[in-house]
Length: 271
Ligand SMILES: [Zn+2]
Ligand SMILES: [Zn+2]
Image 1 (cartoon, rainbow, N blue to C red):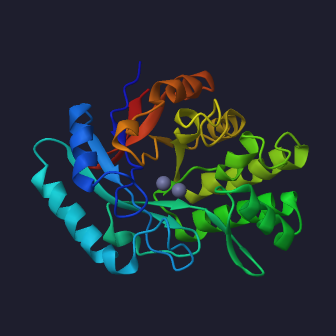
Image 2: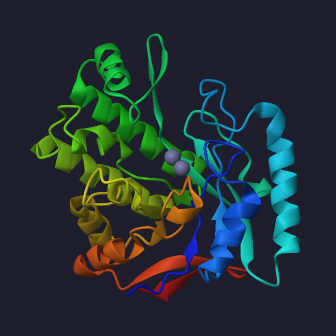
């Protein structure tokens, strides 16, 4: 059973999603959700494949705001954006912003650490190994949390997407790795950011655990960091995919509520 009838992490055809804004909103209504937030990848010059093209940023913002009004009697629509850590936007222009680390900066440019093993390897080669990649990821995430303070930090340990599938040999059981996350979470707790529990790894069959892992969720729970449950839907059928499994894992580590966005702001809702 699951009480969370909202998802703030959705992509449309403006970026790398498969459905239009209106199809996503209609699917959310059909599911009986109380709200949907669209958070397409904001334009970044080093990612011309997944992001909204620069000239479409304004039309995206405009269309989303007009759909919000058009659908207000049927569902609450929130206008958001997912920004990458190296290309930030003014938070005041959006109902909420998801801040995510998708790339690391190497000698030859930006390398994504969640798409292909070859790109991860390239980052490892330029940064000085797998541990250096994880540490650079952690530093980028902490800087994003403390300096930019997005409303929500997206898919916290996405750097393990390929690791969990056995495609990259990063040792996430090593003590340095756990200690690194303890430090990261201390900073995140100070930042006031909400942390996303992203179910995409579960429903894509990549892992039985969401991003972040259960181990990191326990660290977040010890520091009482509030969470938001999101699916990172790139298709309308995944709007609340794996929400019940994730809800069970959250209850098992001691969470009883997550935050849901309402007109008055983020409020606690029982899991
Ligand atoms: Zn993302
Ligand atoms: Zn996303």
